[in-house]
Length: 140
Image (cartoon, rainbow, N blue to C red; front, side, top):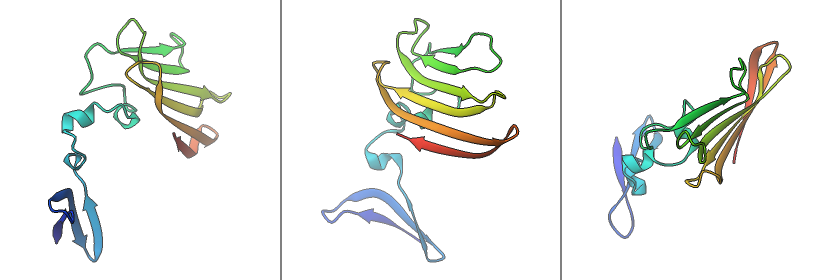
């Protein structure tokens, strides 16, 4: 069973409600926000980057830098708009424990100016030996 939502003033508000075994589920497509799928891809939100840098919807030529150079355990991975490294897109910072496992992993998303941080996610990780046991995520 499903129904489409309407506003009191008339017109579709852009969601579909499904009812399964007396439990309501609401599906809100991207178009409900007035955004096209391409506009949604271009959002500078960390969810679009965390896997491996910028993708669809961003300009070709992005440049990735891993520091320290040649190190087996990187401390930072930064994507820039190009090889001039003047404007950051997204940055991953890793603070390591003495055994080289990540203690914290911070992701910073940058505005179009390449300087202003527009979003940050910090994971704090606990271990038994080298095996991850818990992870706490802070989103700002």
